[in-house]
Image (tube, rainbow, N blue to C red):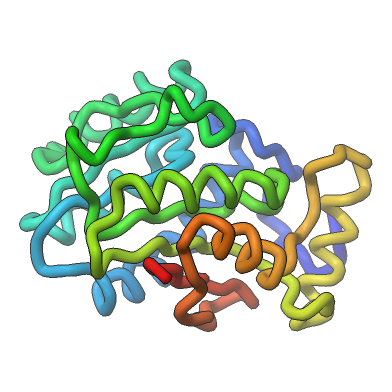
Length: 219
């Protein structure tokens, strides 16, 4: 554990049902919710990519009764967790989860099924390659409404540099296991990947704990 890590933080483990993911979700969900209250539409459909255990979507949905939320993940084993959390919270505006593997186009949703006013993904790119942004952008190009947006939350480097010493330390901790896709990604690399699919970076929003929301929309 890095010297900058909170004492109660479990060891880093990206598995969606791990104690670390639950801890991180509880820590960041309210700041994200506050920002979403500013940018989400008054009505429409919202898609979460890489929903994992469903910690975020089930926390957000009750605050937006006029929106319908679609959870998704490539791992169908997490679907029971998503639905259990929904049922326990009485989440009437959350659809059953669907399989979306961002590396497998045959799993991507179709515009003929539903268009989305917002798409969001939380804390994915610390443990996913930049190429996953190609999948996100292609999904967005398929199913995002004309004025819709994609919100990607997490810590990032900007123009090749860390924005804080704590993010540099966090990155070194992530890189320590030497797993190829792990590590903080650069905003500009995600921007280039999205641009190739008609999706453009519109805004970088500062968030607590040295994180960002990257807001993308149609080019």
